[in-house]
Length: 283
Ligand SMILES: Cc1cc2nc3c(=O)[nH]c(=O)nc-3n(C[C@H](O)[C@H](O)[C@H](O)COP(=O)(O)OP(=O)(O)OC[C@H]3O[C@@H](n4cnc5c(N)ncnc54)[C@H](O)[C@@H]3O)c2cc1C
Image 1: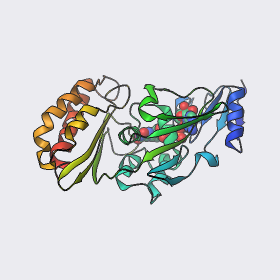
Image 2: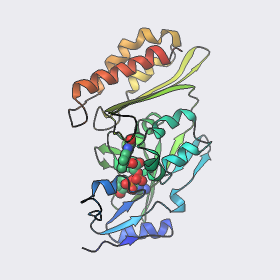
Image 3: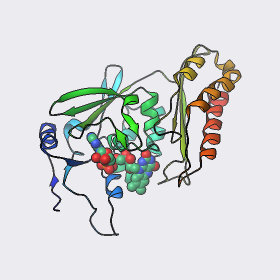
């Protein structure tokens, strides 16, 4: 079958193409071309039309939008890392994606739409309560990130929809951690990850968020555990750690696969959560 590569000039043209017929949407291609790779040097095995969306203006740019950032779905990780608008606490997960070459072309929208449980930007998008703007020729809708992933590789995107932008609230977090556990530092898919963010004011925890990656089909956040922390004196958080960890432990559902084991994932993710609660939050 002949593969046509379509380069729409505008979002409207791209949406019209998607409405007409099934296309494979390609932004940076770092997931897609690997997934469809054939023998070294040969063309990837893509059937049907390929719609290039990485250069569409509507999907690009990072801009302030009230109390949030509007990040175009085709913003690359390199662009996010270079942007002065992006808070430093958000940059660690972006910096841990692949290698400089991958970050130069890999996009945040591609990471979200690919829906790998190990996607490095996903715990952050979950922790921030990000909202995704999806558009098709039928109209647009805003989908909270927590409703976007239906399982590994499965999202709420309809076949004729594009992920156009992400709205990420700018929150007053003053401390945070991103720990990615992988086989090596670069170009490594994570075995598991932990993201913690907190705002502490006058010694009181005003807001605390924890998101665990690759320990369940989708990112795990446990609202009851976060509520338990809010309002505590930061120095009293270690005393509450066991109760918080019990809630996290109940919520995670790690599996055995080629990258790690269920037992390792459970043990290490809970240890990282404990470290956040005992060492980072009270600091
Ligand atoms: C060597 C290597 C190392 C890597 N290391 C990491 C890593 O450490 N951490 C990590 O998280 N990932 C890693 N990845 C995976 C990949 O780079 C990221 O997931 C990246 O963010 C994908 O973005 P992309 O633009 O290249 O997506 P693409 O490959 O273009 O697309 C991925 C999927 O999303 C869909 N899609 C893309 N954009 C849109 C859109 N706007 N609307 C609707 N659907 C869309 C595509 O149809 C496809 O199904 C690595 C990949 C490689 C090749």
